[in-house]
Amino acid sequence: MKKFLCAVLAAAIAAGTMAIPVSAAWEQDASGVWRYEQSDGSLSTGWQKIGDCWYFFSSQGEMRTGWQYLGQNWYYFHPSGAMATGWVQTGGKWYFFDADGKMRTGFVHDGNCWYYLDGNGAWTEDDPESHTAVTKTGKTASLKNGMFYVDGILIANKSYPLPAGYAPGGLTSETQQAFSELHNAMAAEGLSLWVASGYRSYDYQAGLYRKYVNRDGKAAADRYSARAGYSEHQTGLAFDVNQVDDSFANTPQAKWLAEHAWEYGFIIRYPKGKEGVTGYQYEPWHLRYLGKETAKAVQDSGLCLEEYLGIDSVYSR
Ligand SMILES: [Zn+2]
Image 1 (tube, helix red, strand yellow):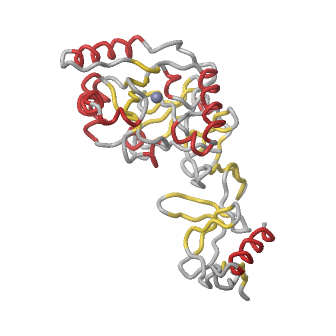
Image 2 (tube, rainbow, N blue to C red; image 1 turned 45 degrees about the horizontal axis):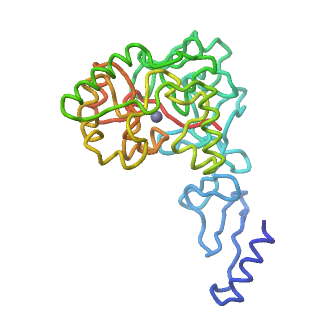
């Protein structure tokens, strides 16, 4: 890696496009504190990705280690300074950190298993289904038959997958009934509405995701397609309507749905500007059935479902 960089820099210098650089470097002072000097001579402060790892430096440039509370989340930095992800044992207890480094509490799914972490993030050996957890907005989370519910609402997102064997086989009858009402109300106003993609099984989603990864790469695919088990389409409570592409957003149907879908028990599940929370880019065509009461409450809140329920949506790996 270093050799490669040197060759690139040497070429840039030879081409006259760059002044002779001072290479970035780690330095340790007499008291043992590490700092990272960047190639322009300034010290790294705040979050900094070096190599494959994230580090955190104080405003004075001091590298942090151990537990750190940053932006309302707990993180753990190894003695090397590298931010922890996955399982970490410290102080005799096990903790779990998501791929973005945030410490998890409550229910965590990893390697096809559920675990329960107490309010301090420490793993308990009890059966996770014997516990409930309080979300960031004070709602009650629980686990039943390997499925994650918040205030009785079944969740399928990047933090909370469904079991591979969960297969309602189609849209639930309640969802279908609500769709008929929605469809008829729109038809009365001359607006056409059809289900472009409804229920998807675990195996079907696995094939779909694989196809997208092969085409666009994993990082891009994760922005618009779910991994198997993580798709809301597997719940039988969600579906895509009409043309599933960006042009749909400007149609009268999309505008009508954004205003009225809640009246029929649906929400636009992945709203504009909420990608950092839902984990998915804007999808004006993806509807989730919640029932009229909950859909109204979410709509009135102006929040996306994760914000409303106080949960995250981020892959643990
Ligand atoms: Zn969808």
